[in-house]
Image 1: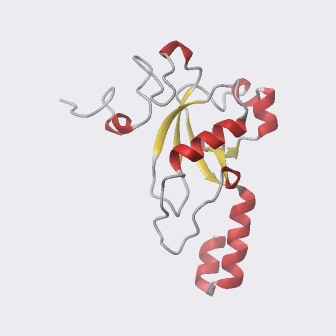
Image 2 (image 1 turned 90 degrees about the vertical axis):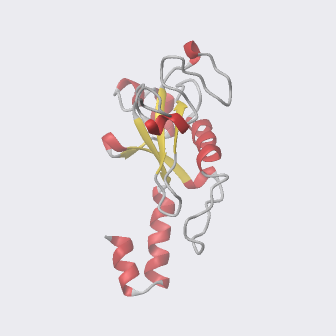
Length: 157
């Protein structure tokens, strides 16, 4: 048998949501018919162990609400894998990345419904929670000024 899996996919068994059929949001008890856009969100930040969650990206909620909820789900209780790494302090240090389109979601585009119209964010897609471009740039500059030459080359390339 498939053991501890959901629709044949072992990775889904431990996530916040169950797939579409019999699907419900475990933390807010939404009924299946209330799920607007079920997406998988992966934590894609080097200093943290990979994690993923299934999440309802309702177009009615502002992007900042989604980012805050995902920060709380994926990062708030996580510890950086490298003890020397600075833990992320707030949801303002992360943003949602659309891997299939190689771009970050922006609040203005979200508010105008662009990701839905352009099919960037659709039911079943995968998004990633990453550090913001500004924080990434800051961290690269820090490694260039404080680190060794090899660390600087690694940060840039």
